[in-house]
Image (tube, rainbow, N blue to C red):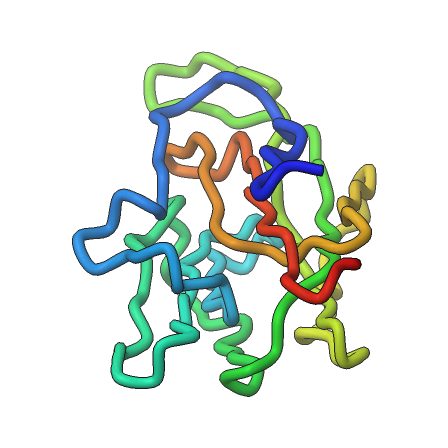
Length: 168
């Protein structure tokens, strides 16, 4: 019954680690409440996450961009300020990437994130190539922030969940 749950590590250990909670303005009262997704018309999304604060005076902060897909906007979405995310869904795609030196590498890439709130709302759905779906939710917890690994693509995501205060 801990205050914070570190969720599962979805994906692989490729790429460089990132941690949105190290943003200079991130505080314990911030929580993930929106998503900005871009892609290169290849269904592989890069993300920035929006973090709202439960302290009214603090502005929404935007994470660094994770992944380097930038050609087109897919979705730019924020929930209402007081909505908390209780469930995450996403997809793994096994993609063969051809590098400039001619090397082919097949790697697992994370894409197609969708969030669901405690009020029953959902962020825009993913309409790209179907991979293997994953989902995560913990009863009595809402989404706090994200860590993961990325380079050109997002290779790993791990969600951190904060206990909601209305547990008996």
